[in-house]
Length: 101
Image 1: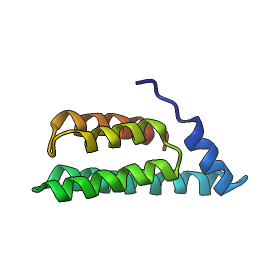
Image 2: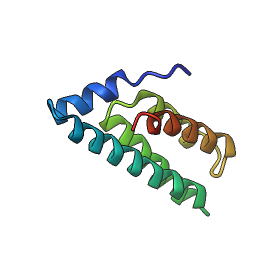
Image 3: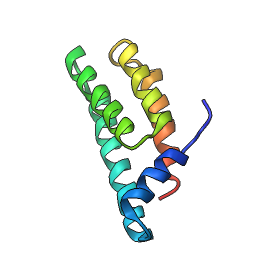
């Protein structure tokens, strides 16, 4: 999967305008929210909890136009609950976003 964060950056820039501090704060809030959903995925003990966390993550990704995260979250929805490969894929995507904070 190619990493493309241009759409995420454009979305954040549209919200933050010319304020780089606000843009960094928004990026941080995005990553923190995504990490919260990832934590819920890891701790899911039933299909319903897994599905809700993956759907929330997918919605967050869609809201911010984060294509790689959207694809990874959809992969989690398509996978069996608790699938370690899905969790690793989301972790990989989030680590790329986090590296830019």
